[in-house]
Amino acid sequence: MSTYLWVNLGAIAIPLAFSFHRRLRFDRTWFALWPALLGTAAVFIAWDVLYTHWGVWGFNPLHLTGHEWLGLPVEEWLFFICIPYACLFTYHWLGYAIERDWLGGAVGTISRGLSLALLALAAIFFDRIYTSVTCAGTAVLLLAHLHWIRSLYLGRFFLAYIVILLPFLLVNGILTGSWIEEEVVWYDDGENLNLRVMTIPVEDFIYAMLLLLVNVTLFEALKSRRRKGADVAGD
Image (spheres, rainbow, N blue to C red):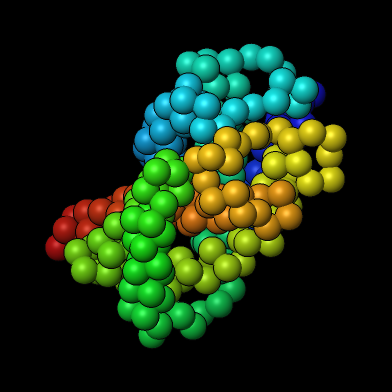
């Protein structure tokens, strides 16, 4: 079995096992979870196909099963299911474990500060496609949440992102070559800042935020629609 496949399965194993816990009952959110995962995956896989074709990043056959579709290894397709599932489970669990929205009052400051910094990076490094697109996309989505979507869960999202950083370092560390012989995923450093935390490109931290926020946005929107439908039916 490939290294990449083991990473995917390891990431989803515990969240999937605890999805049916009698207090958490994460499985009762699956009506929103699976459309959110698949909708987000469709966008990010299209992005992935293009970047792989352009050589922005690629995959080491040493750590793969060898099966591909649309130029992507099957493990990469699974990545956009297994990793977001684990992240959304963590987000859901934190909603039960921590009643207070500790970062809710700082959402405006955090979002504006991050957006300003990311837009500046996107402009300065416009010629580096991974840096510019990832930073600009994340900044735009954060500003959309702040000024258009006006979501009430952004503080909880930021908390979940902070908590997820530890397993992120483990998973992405392995994928980018920490603790193993040769990396699973390689990058053209001409398309990024060529700055790394361990072996992880700093852009991956922003990419992870964008991936999680898109998933959470769709997840919360679908849950909200179900609640509104139930309220209307109740009337």
